[in-house]
Length: 361
Ligand SMILES: NC(=O)c1ccc[n+]([C@@H]2O[C@H](COP(=O)([O-])OP(=O)(O)OC[C@H]3O[C@@H](n4cnc5c(N)ncnc54)[C@H](O)[C@@H]3O)[C@@H](O)[C@H]2O)c1
Ligand SMILES: O=C(O)C(=O)C[C@]1(C(=O)O)C=C[C@@H](O)C=C1
Image (cartoon, rainbow, N blue to C red; front, side):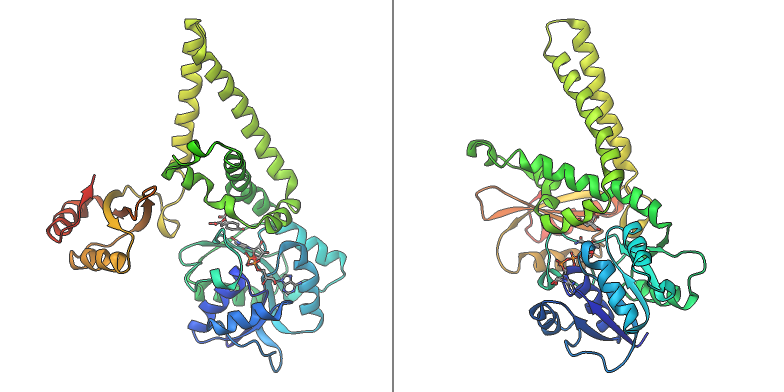
C-alpha cells in the first residue's frame, strides 16, 4: 500500500494515520472540521491537502451515525481502490449502504478492538492497535484485492486480524464492549450525587471499573443506537443477576439462619462466576491469559521517576509485560505495578531494592 485517505481524524482515524505514516504510507487527512485534520497533520499523521488522485485505501473513521453517508460519498467519487470503515457496529452500515444503492464491491466493514475513553486527534497514538484484534467482516463474493488491502492495513497497524460475520460481530461486541460501557457508566453514575466523604475514599477498584465511564456520550449514544437489541438482551441477563444478588444480600441481613445460608451461597456463586469469566479474558497479544506476578513499587509523582524505574528494570534484564499506576489519594506519590513473569520476580526485587526502590509485595 502506497497511499491512504483517512476520513475522520479523531482518536481512531489519527491513530491509523500515524501508524501508516510511520511505515512509509503517504496519508491524506480529511475531516468535516478542518481544524481536526490540521491538528492530525501537525502531529505527523499525514497531510491535510487532498490527494491528487485515487488512493489505494480509504479509511472512514467518523461516528457511526455518519458512516454510511461518508462511505457512500467515497465510493461514488471513486476516491480509493478499496474502502473500509472502523465503526464499532457492523450490521447497520452495510445495510444502510445497500439501501443507498451503493456498489459494495470496493467496501469492507472492519472494527479495531482498541480505543480509549478520550476522543480527538490529540488522544491518538501510533501503537494503539498493536497486538489487538481487528475484526474484518467480508461478505461472500467480496473482491480479494479489497480484503488484501484491509489485511495489509491491519498488519501495518500491528493488529491481529479476526474474520467474522457482521451480525455475529455485533452480538459479540454487545457482550464484550457495549454492555461493559453501560455497566461502567451505571456504577460511575452512583458517584454523581454521592457524599464527598465517600468519594474521597475512591481507590483503585472503582478507578478500574469506571475508566470508560469518561467516554464521549454522543459517540456511545450513536454506537448503542446501532446495536440496541443485542445489548438489551445481555443487560436483561445482568439485571436478573442483580436481582438475585440483591435477594442474596437481603438474605445475609436476615435473622433467619437458612436465609443467611442461601445468601452466602448466592453471593459466592456470583463471585466465583466472576472469577471464571475474568479468567477467560485473553492475555497480551490475544494469547491465552498468562499467570504473571505483580510487583508494586513506591514511586514519586515527579519528572523522570518512570524513566528511572524502567531503566533499572531494563538493567535487571527483566521484560515488563504490563504496567499500571495506583495513585495515592492526596499525596504526590503512588505505586507502579510492574507485571512480570513469575521467574523474574526475585531478580527484579533484588535489583530494584539495591537501587533504592521500596517494594510492596
Ligand atoms: N473510541 C473508541 O474507543 C473506538 C474504538 C474502535 C472503533 N471506534 C469507531 O471509530 C470511529 C471514530 O471514533 P473516534 O473515537 O475516533 O471518534 P472521535 O470523536 O475522536 O473522531 C471522530 C472524527 O470524525 C469527524 N467527523 C464527524 N462527522 C464527520 C463527517 N460526516 N465527515 C468527516 N468527518 C467527520 C469529527 O470531526 C472527528 O474528528 C467511530 O465509528 C467509532 O465507533 C471507536
Ligand atoms: O479501552 C477503551 O477505552 C475502549 O473503550 C475500547 C473499546 C472497547 O470496548 O474495548 C470501545 C469501543 C470500541 O468500539 C472498541 C474498543
